[in-house]
Length: 123
Image (cartoon, rainbow, N blue to C red; front, side):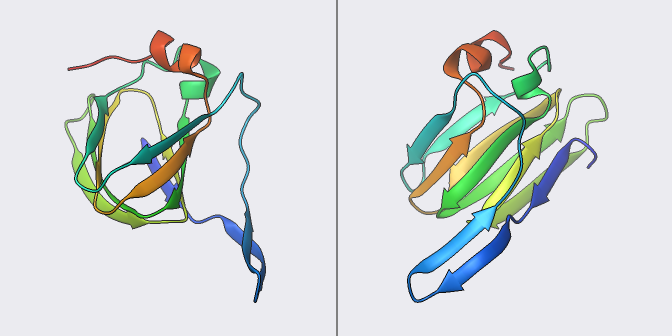
């Protein structure tokens, strides 16, 4: 599916203290930090890509596990993936996406609430 890209951040340190990872994103007006409880469902929307922060939307799953459902609104292609942290998720415009928390989890969205509200559509 061309409108969805999943990658792992690059680990640059790992020792008895823990691990550190690097990944890249574009400048944003702000960031959203979300915690979701096991079994909860989020999203079920798509973006037009009017905002640079939503073209693509970038999420960093920092802890836990999610089930990601994605449907390309142009082709009708559907995809379901289970993802464990850490994972970088890039969601292109016109991709309906729904996140179900398989466990308690946390993720960062690399956009502000203003950018999110201005570029979100629900089916």
